[in-house]
Amino acid sequence: MSIRIDKEKCIGCGRCIEACPGNLLKKDQNGKAFILHMRDCWGCTSCLKECKSSAIRFFLGADIGGRGSALSVDIVGDRYLWQVTDSAGKVRSIEVNKKEANKY
Image 1: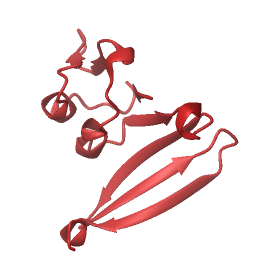
Image 2: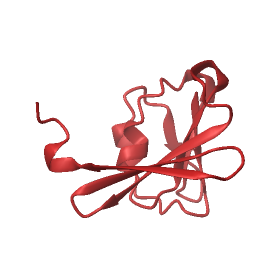
Image 3: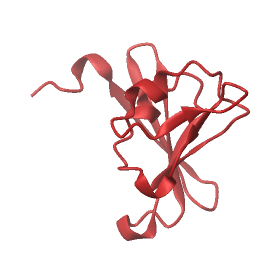
């Protein structure tokens, strides 16, 4: 499992860098985020949730049944919109209300 950062979408805000518990994300000479060593990514998705420009995708490996699928998240008001795009391009969405996400 690992993340990929789309440099075209990255706005260089640094929110992902601050969120990464492993201190794996850095900025390049153009101010765009990149992952230092992909193999070290824990798969926590903290960076993914903090990215306001949808520049980060999380790749779901075959070891967890992902078969090349990619996970992304958008924030729409009080909701997270989690989207899984499979290798054929089919998109499935899950919408979560941020205010009630941890309600038990």
